[in-house]
Length: 605
Image 1 (cartoon, rainbow, N blue to C red):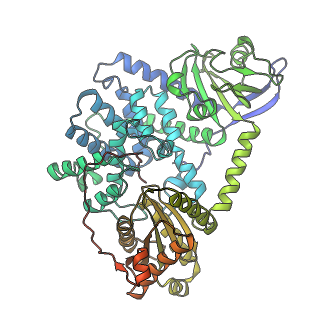
Image 2: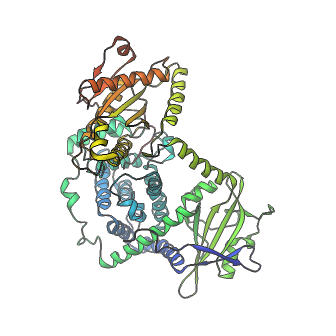
Image 3: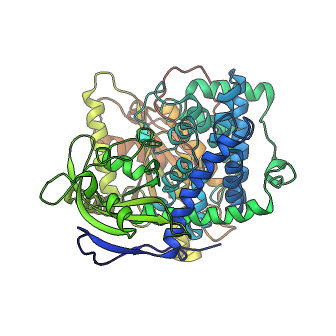
């Protein structure tokens, strides 16, 4: 496999073209070929779906040969992921059947589950197979899998409902601002299936969770990330029928005999991997792109184009390109005529070019862009389509990126990547101010934790191992929190977790779950080093100051230390004043009731 984007070439500006109004560019053989392959994939998907039987077209959701090629590429790239999506599909469809789904709806959910991590095909090796925690830059690159996956699935003519299920089940779906009725029920089912399977299997940074532990985690995120009704139904379903897969499935090879993958498809899979890798490069370097075929029909409208122009892909795909849909103006603010469009010029000349123009958003706003227009010409010299690739040149965009980078540097702890103390205190002050202003505020709690015997770790194994422990601990905290918690490094080996919509008892349960996870985890390269952590928990109360919150949580944590370390202590304001505290029961009984409140859903890991 490839390690970086070594086989991927980009488009390079050359000398100005006479009368072209822009600059000509040469497109490397590799770059043009991969774009052309992507266009062919889109056309072949149309042919396969229309020429095959209903079964071959999988109820019009996706052409069966295309689905096989995608899954073959995913298997070729990462066997663990193909096993994960298969189990997720079994889980999601099993749960859906339990609530009465059947027919085409069930088929669409199954295919969405199989394809929801297809973007991992293009993740570079150093990120996908990294044995330890990802740094912030690597996490940003890894998160790009969702954009790349959607680009390819558009090209594969996947049914729009499948695209909706996949996009709405991801953690970045509008930051949880959608209500439960706005999120596709299939997306909510997939989010639970994906999380359950991931949690039930060992990861590089933690051991597998038991069924009871998983239910506790999901229930703890009801109302913010997971649909409480579905969590309750899932619990009843598993109690009645059991988990729909077993450990043996994780070891079983993907079947070949049933027509799943053949040698020719393995070759197609390798080609598909290169397409994904190229798209990662494209999404990393540019702000958006689209592809039209020789009939000027939109075949791909990337997520970057959706962000830039405010036009959703569902309104562009399969519609014909016109100068009114993507409206350009020159530097003198003169709207370009149809024949002056960069796309028209490259069709006439057969040569790629780059132009600096203005483009109009759907809200009427104009902004500066650089557009690289690339004719896609087949080996016989025939024009198959055009790719237009955009770079946002606006001052606002540059300023936003610079501000984002500066803010990240100013607010993040340089070692662990979580909030630093300054940003943590600013966030807590803001949340506490809102809490005290509200006459009937939602509960909110703070978890304070300190690594036990950390000085001894540094003295025995040196500071490099100590740093690994802190990095590993921060990564574990992030991976275990599902409900919009805010994690920060308070200083040294101390961390805090702000838990919104969480009362004292619920926060203590979360802290205890974290404590047991840390005990089971390997947080450094020293395999026999077992790390324990002491926790203190307190709940916000009306009239509290930030100092009050810190003092109570710190006292609770200190009580855990006094009682032998590696434990959780919860402390209310009343208990703090009276000098009493409560050490948390290590096995709180989870309760699962029918919930009506739900804000957003998320995939895990």
